[in-house]
Image (tube, rainbow, N blue to C red):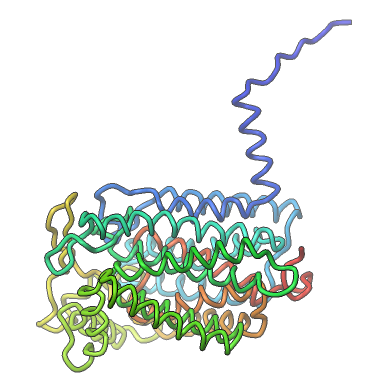
Length: 445
């Protein structure tokens, strides 16, 4: 009889196998990793001008691969029929727009990006959220990422090392830099809303007082870096989403929160002067965007007009993904600026071209036509109404995050490092709004 001696596995190989086993057992960790990896700096590349594969994108694709294998092996629940129909509608709309595009070869890369953001990653997130612990892991990653960006952003404002705003280096941009000016405010907004929802979920008997205090403190801190991001769009979206969240949770609590927020703003801005001049000027400008808009707002109106003109030429299936930037100059008003200014200590001064309408709904209308608009509105409205009906526990956070996305899409569109976060939010919302026949109306414990 021959003896076969087996050498012990190297420690590194054992660690890899253990890690793979943990991820396979709880794929929501990959969803959390997708959120956290958004914080990694991308260098000086302009991540908004074209499709760039980031570490967060790779993590999201790993999540898709793991959940696909689990589905094939029967280890995880399948998509709810309604969710499959809604996501299938997005696929058909994007495919039709690509086939009928003015330049199908160019639109193909846009088609792949749309599948990633609005179909594959959301579906994978739905399949990865198996119980309440999974939901808390993902929401916790939003809070952790926001705290990282919030600390960096607050430091940039206080030490005057941020991006340029009114000629001063005080705009908080986190690790994203001046070329992705909305990145930090997006991450901080998501984290603030997630922390607030977690705090509300810990009220009453059985809730953790320690977790409630920690998440409430995190939400309070994140209000400062959000303020000094000077992003009017993020302010509006966060205010609307927080209002929806509080009203759905407790109307009386919403009234008290409004009074406390106003008092805090008076103390911090009026008394201590934190961000006083910039924040006050920016808030004042919100009321003048229709009567006397500044250049950035005027450009945005002109870009919306451009998108409408492109749609008139391609009403049913649109001009095709990524066609807006090619058709912009031939359809834009003459007064449209050549680009927007970006400046910080790293990149100096740059002029960035305006390559999208800065409105997701107008972008879909111009590039995917009426077919696309119907598909996307069906997805958003179904998820919103579903989360409203089940706004208890996990659905409360999903409702707030989805409300932020739908409002933000009125003056922003996909593009930049944080785009993949929209996919995770859609997955969270779909899991809450459409729990499926094998669920008990919410997450199992």
